[in-house]
Amino acid sequence: MTVQEASTTSQPVAAEAEHISLSRDLGLLDITMIGVGAMIGAGIFVLTGIAAGHAGPGLILAFFLNGLIALIIGAAYAELGSCFPEAGGGYLWVKQGMSEVFGFLSGWMSWFAHAVACSLYALGFGSFTAELIRLGFGEPKIGYHTLQVAIGVVAAAVFTYINFRGSSETGLVGNIVTSIKIFILLVMAGFGLYKIFGTPGSFDHYTPFLPEGMLGVFVAMGLTFIAFEGYEIIAQSGEEVKDPQRNIPRAIFLSIVIAVAIYLLVAFVVLGALEPPPGVPIYKFLGTLGELGMAEAAGQFMPAGKVILL
Image 1 (cartoon, rainbow, N blue to C red):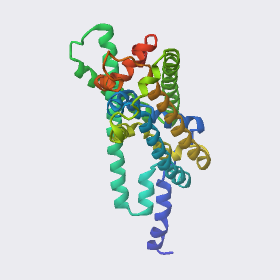
Image 2 (cartoon, rainbow, N blue to C red):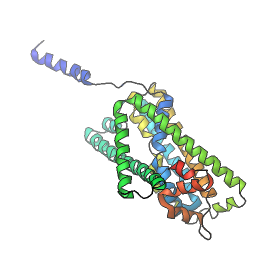
Image 3 (tube, rainbow, N blue to C red):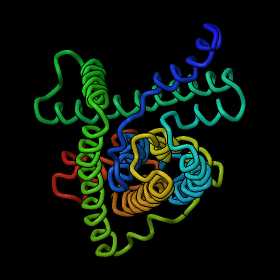
Image 4 (tube, helix red, strand yellow):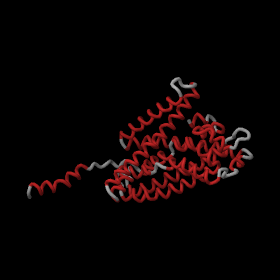
């Protein structure tokens, strides 16, 4: 064997040696909770009131249609994620199916999209926490907006560090945070349903169902679709999932179904249990409350509801 042949033969070996596999630590529960946690983020808390201001009770239809779209897209992610259970998700699939150039572009588009989503979640968390501080201690001296941004930056830094620590820590923290969010939303829904079914005339809040027509529904769908994303993280984490061919499709389906069911319940409760000022349609009232609409609604029918939601 010549030196050139030896060099050529060693190149694939070196390339293989350079490939680093991630440990498969995430089971079905872990990866499902990560998907649900990524979906049930600031989007549902911040955007429900704003979207209701456009669609009225049609927000329920908007959530349902967004859920169907998410299931269709999720089916593609489930199929590809189980076939290519490696880190990278959509970037990897585009790279293998087309070329490295398109893979490069799709990878950066994915990074940008997730950066925008994370910014929304961080600012939403900052907004709610700043409002909670204002309720307890009065107007912050540094200004509400400055406090909101500062809290968002700190929250983003903390969760970046947790993700940097590895999948075990990410899965544990994700399970805890997601469980708390689901518990709070279900408790709120329970109080809301009690109010709706125990108060005569509550179902009148759902009429007219489409006060702004289908245009309002489409606007609400566009505003809230970011709350129906997040399950793609399951496919992107494929190299860290145990038994990926079995668990990735199941986790994607379960995360979408769980999140959409909770969203529909939240929309039904917020639109039916909130009491607006006299002469003001409930959806208009929610629209004026903006990102705090859901918290203000919970404060009406749930003990310490606003504080708990914040």
